[in-house]
Image 1 (tube, rainbow, N blue to C red):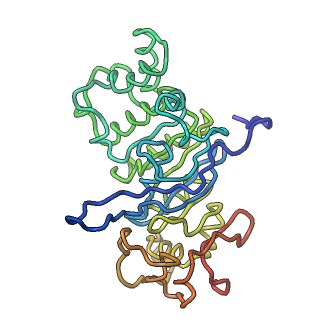
Image 2 (image 1 turned 90 degrees about the vertical axis):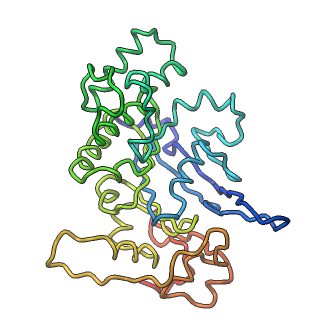
Image 3 (image 1 turned 90 degrees about the horizontal axis):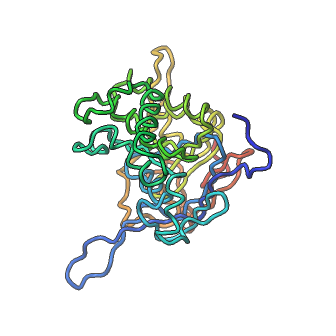
Length: 329
């Protein structure tokens, strides 16, 4: 599906997105906050797939849910086709819900066990369309066929399906109201490898067929390399590096990205790659390090890394990193 040249090539602009969670505190103690996402900015182009990667606790899922307002951000702007979603009331946000959908990570807990597949997928249609009951049923049947299931399975309950089939139901639910943007939150991480490949191919086919835009949250760099056009690397709530997939994965310029890539297995025993072992554990997001949040684990850290948060600087066209060390790599 070709891109309309009259349209803005950027579908979603995220600027300064921040999410802090207040923690329980001791009696009369000071307030403390988990800084899950801290001042991140990026663009998502129309009909592209952008990968959001990082180790557990880096803030990937929180960022994805915050930009959809499934959780309310603490600060920032999320512009969808020029409209700042964070400035809208709940009522004003409702019409945008059908354009912005999510595929959840766990195909077991994300489907209501008391509802049939027809009810699960048709729920959004009851809210966001004026289809009759028979029209909704036809739409559900079409969606099930599109994701590789059978129309007669709509009367079944989630426990009657395998994990891969449940994830296909989750994809059909996200597609029900013809969205233009979908957050896929580690949507294949809970599946067997063979089933992962089937779901990834399905997502890729649907993206090309329907002209979808996806933010694909993952920790498997091989999956990101296969599926995504661009990659954003997060660590402790901040963006470390960002750029086109081919450029970033073949020539990473940030020490954290290099460490992530060194940990990814290579399916070729003849290839040798030096593993970069990071020292210590990931710091607490309640008390993140000053300056560069990665400096306490970085093998190239210097005293200046503790002074100020490094801005994202361009190292090649469309490729940026947050590191003050210009002499590295």
